[in-house]
Image (spheres, one colour):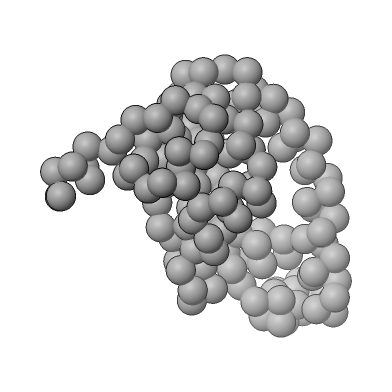
Length: 136
């Protein structure tokens, strides 16, 4: 349920209906929502441990890309190394997203971006994306 609803952006109503159709398991929409909340709580220690890794090491190459989610534009913020990838999707691009996706504020590596002013508020190393220079 959590994977369908939160990863594939299947609505709560449709997720509940799929549980009934596929597994003959009747669940309420509230159950789908509760499962997502429980999943977040279960994953919280892993997210915190990952945050410690990102904040202590300085050799990461984060990227930012736009992603479509639930028929509205969201921003996909990505931190990646050779072995770890963290992704956070948020409807905002700047400060509000940085607060919500707290890991971005802990990041101390090299942030590759387009030079948008709010990125400069992050206390990390900065590098400008050459693709933006070539288009400019």
